[in-house]
Image 1 (cartoon, rainbow over the protein chains, first blue to last red):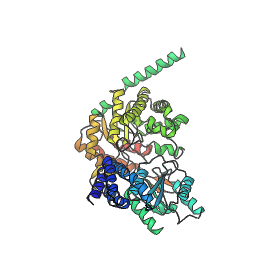
Image 2 (cartoon, rainbow over the protein chains, first blue to last red):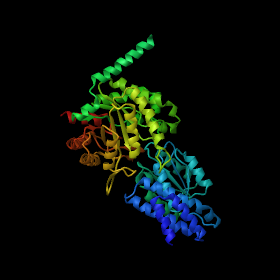
Image 3 (tube, chains in turn yellow, cyan):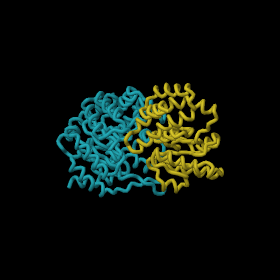
Image 4 (tube, rainbow over the protein chains, first blue to last red):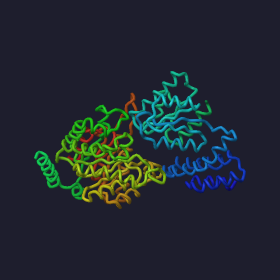
Length: 212
Length: 313
């Protein structure tokens, strides 16, 4: 158990080399990959998420923690798949068409991975049809959309509309976020959820999966 | 022959700019309060800039729009007018496939403002973030980011700007690289450097965790001539930020608030702070001793004109 706490601490401190070493060690000792993920990597990212929410750490700390988390996750992934552990859920995420800003989207993506979700990151400037197609093809149940520009926000509404036209409303849920986006706007376009920051987005995605 | 004449004319004009105008840093040192312009992006969108298009692409297609905007801010009474080059470093332009046009985009943007204002206002070359995160938390190497700023700044200075305005920075290392690039190209070109802060329960920090005190130390170290904040906040929060800057620095301060934080009505961004409200808040900035007062997102020539009138009272 001590080693798992050390892994969690390694994530918090962004020590990627140490995480890779430690993860290999606990795998060799026979600890279940699911336990390493939950009590090591995710436990660490949860602390990172809390501290980020409380403004005691900032974006660079989260990015370094994410790097460390991936160092462990890359080793665990094949084992998790081999043992048939499904991810908590699959989320397609991207900055909408016309929007090249991706810091916020990347942050949400990191936090969702850190919470155990499987993320399909389509990058930025993603056309609405690509979002919908990717969600259908990958059997994702949530589409996350980010916009930093007031001028690109309407694209979010187009995705919601497209899902409705294809009869996918309720089957694929939508969450929106980004500096100019508000809960009023989310309601206005018929999105299922709005995340006001990265940590809040994770909570909202969790609740979307509970109702899906 | 024609070419020689044209070159002579350019040289003459550049030298007359230098001799006729007191350099910006001297006027700042004298304690004068200068008015900077308001938003560029807001006005570009009103004039048909496509959502999601590269704002700098308008410089190549419609430089006359930039002249018009500069003229509006000049008539409103701005002393310092920025160029449409916020995203004009090659690293940022590369996202739109325009890195090869770096020199043309920056040169033409300066020319447009200079045509409009001649010697009646300072032309400030705008330099915004490069859009990449630096190592170790991102992929961009410091020398790559520095090189990108250097290319932009060389074009801006060669085209005859009076000063460089490094703005909306959230990463102190990146901000310092930009200021260094200016000072390496031309030590005598004044640089204003401003960052974007968020209010947290523990004080003001950029998204990257830079405190006001950190910003002051870092930007002072690389030789910025004026430091401060722009964007991200309305006037009231900016007064608090200015006060925090003043408590740790005696350098001239530059403060450019948004006209409040935007909310969306009928799919459009609306900024609520009126010209009168912002001018009233600017009184507090003056009493703190801010040297350059202007506006960021959502501010218009009307905001600048009201501010000018208040200061001239």
